[in-house]
Amino acid sequence: MTRQMSGQPPTPAPVRALTAPVLRDWLRLVRRTEEITRTLVDSLNVFPVPDSDTGTNVLLTVRAACDAIRLLPASADLVQVSRAAADGAIRGARGNSGLLVSQALAALADVCAEGPDPTALRPVEIVHAYERIADTTWAAVSRPVGGTLLTVARDAAAAARTALEESEPAAPASVSTICAAAAFGAQESVVETAGLGHGPVDAGGAALMLMLTCLSDTVDTEARAELDDGADGAVELPKPCTEVAHQMLVDLVAGATHGVTGPSDAVQATSAGEFEVMYLLDATATQASALRSELERIGDSVGVVGTPDALGMGLYQVHVHTDTPRAALPRAGRARQVCVHHLHPTALAVATGWEEDEPPLPAAGRAEGDAHVVSFERLAARREKHRAARRDRSMRQHPSQLSPSVSEAERTGVITCTRAPGLIEQLARTGAVVVLHPERDGIIRAAVDLGLGRVIVLPCDSECAAHAHEAARFLAARSSVSRVRGAVEPAPVPGESVQLLVCDTDDEARVLAAAVAVAGRAEDLTTMAGRAGRAAIELRTLALSGTDAEADAVVSALDAALRPEDELTTVILGRDAMPDVGALVAEAVTHYGERVLGDPDAIEVVIHAGGQARPDVLLALE
Image (cartoon, rainbow, N blue to C red; front, top):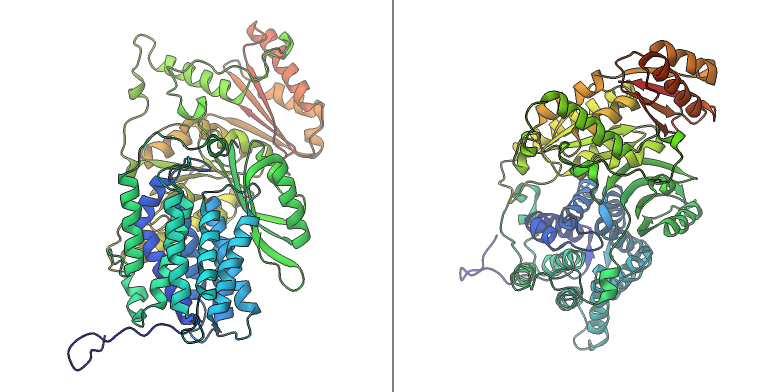
């Protein structure tokens, strides 16, 4: 930095307008700040789901915006840069908080596009941007709750409007004045979220506050060149307003009274959906609006964020918490990168295998003749009991012997891939991230969402396996780039270093068996992959389509394939399967058990309405 003749640093020259270079520098500073504060913001996250990922989700969303604008030429104007940032954020949005951040950037891009000058925003237009952000983020949520990011956005906009209206002709409001007022308004709003049942303070509100303080710091200095890509690894917050906001959050967390809940209505507003469903949707504005109405009927934490073009087509990021993830899939438009997470642990995901009692059947009053159709959770518990008993019939094992203890850094995540929408719930309940209709970018997204350094992928067919290997190569290359930057990261950045191992599963039945085998296991990568591989190898599968999938043909093929040592038959029915196939298969297995083994219930049958396009019927014998 140049210095004056006295040797003192020059007085910073405030930015007179919000331009493309300022916007680029702001987002770079936001990314650095979110990298540094990610774990702090994660620790604040208890609403709408206490999954401690708000800081991570916001970081991933902002990083996607930065990646998008990095592809633009240096000559790109404000309209182009803001739109690229918004589109990148929408594509990369994670979770409810990331969705709202992408909506905020989309609102800013809209104001930039509507302004009289495509290269700059004046103070009055910046106030309009704050107000548009507040209005659109509030409208983006199906059931808005106060004391959250939504309130922080509104309070920041109100503070910016007040600063503009209180200015005088002799001292007109500047960009610096407006942005500083919004930042201070956001800080006051975050403090006021304390004690509302959302943790020490609301995590999403804290993340937005840091974004707004970064903007204030960016427009208050001319020395923005220090924020180039080579400085990404700096561990100290370089700007005063953001430093104060960061310390404020640290102090609020340190002084929080844990275990104290706020008003009952705030607590009741917590999301109750069992699954989180997110995907990108190519659709018209009308289709997106209809989808949002449908999602509001079946779930909460609903968000459908995107900006249609002049022809009414757009790319939307969709998010919902629901008990029926299959119903959250769109009926119109094209969905991609469909990822499903299980938000609440079940007996299957936390069972040690030996100690857990069998979960009850979902319908306890079934007739005796239907007893051979068992629930997925009960099946998993029973199979694990049998295996544990065979391993050691003379000595009871301690549960810790079944899952060797490993550190968090060594834990292995699981991605299950499927083309059968009807298997989403069962696969997600194993604790894996489910990718429906998998392709490379969807698998990459799921791997990053897990936030772990080691992940196994269970592909459902050869095409999926090829996509998974492409994803593994991409993540390995990105990890190499991250390591050679030469910067010291304050904390590992999600997705920067992921080792992806693709297992040898080649159909839905083997994916299901492998997912059950590794459910709830805290093991290293090699052990998990080996366990999944053994579970898949144990299966014999028959894929039947066309005339081979007619009821009589399926029964004949099954009867020829059954062996006396078989314990389980799994049937996954495709979209075009005959309606009576499942019942006839169950009857055939019962007759085989009675005729060959002398026990009609010797072989269990599990029937899934998979809904996959091919094969029409998939049989698995174990």
